[in-house]
Image (cartoon, rainbow, N blue to C red):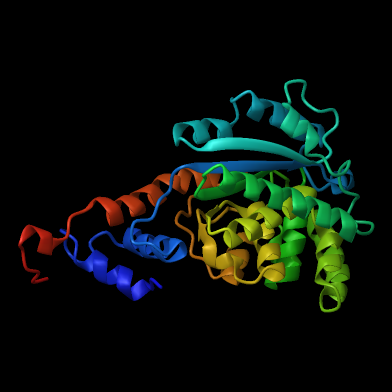
Length: 339
């Protein structure tokens, strides 16, 4: 069993001034403890982007129509989206799965993307349950299958991202439900909503989260399904299964963190495998990270989603691994330490 104290002792013995790399050393400690090895690995790695539509968009919570989800999926598949560009830059395999019934599907969608569908978008959480428990379970199972596939294909570090217009609304509901944030504090501008739209969105979040909260103690899955999204449920299953298989999970922004909250609730211990890539500009993200016990690596005001914040943070995780595996110890150089 490798604990933090042992990793710190190794870092303190390296050929550098003690603690001279600041938070990078803390990251190295977390990475080594997650992987239970002093020579952690960050390659091969994969990002899985889960896509789905949201019925609540029809209630005026987003500055963009649902059709943009499919358009952006096509852009990702063409390798021209921000997520696909960053993944290629950082040598991170990218896979994209339709969980929530995009219609129409992009013409260039490969077979795995077309076959991943479990439903034709959620119902509006403004008027009732977004999905049934059975639909939640089916979406979770998609995430589990993707984690099984990724680990079986040798990937040691996993990232989950999402594409779904309107999905900061269910993310806000889940943050209120599972992290104890106020509906107003959990609700932000998403992809560019103005003040009036944000206020209307907060009212919807408050009512939906209250409905879900009434179910939480009796049936956690039913409460979560009340306000969830298909891609969020799939990310939750991906996180839970990835952690169980020993993978390191690099967490993205607000919507992905909502999936992480679900995984923590339904599969306790999952958060122990997580590293938070960044803190989103969405106001509820800080509360969600606090509930997970995670300190983000970056706080750059990003809010794009698609796994992009995690991808930007990925080189820091690589550097932490390199520190542990590639730097000589002072005693190997025949030098004593005086600092």
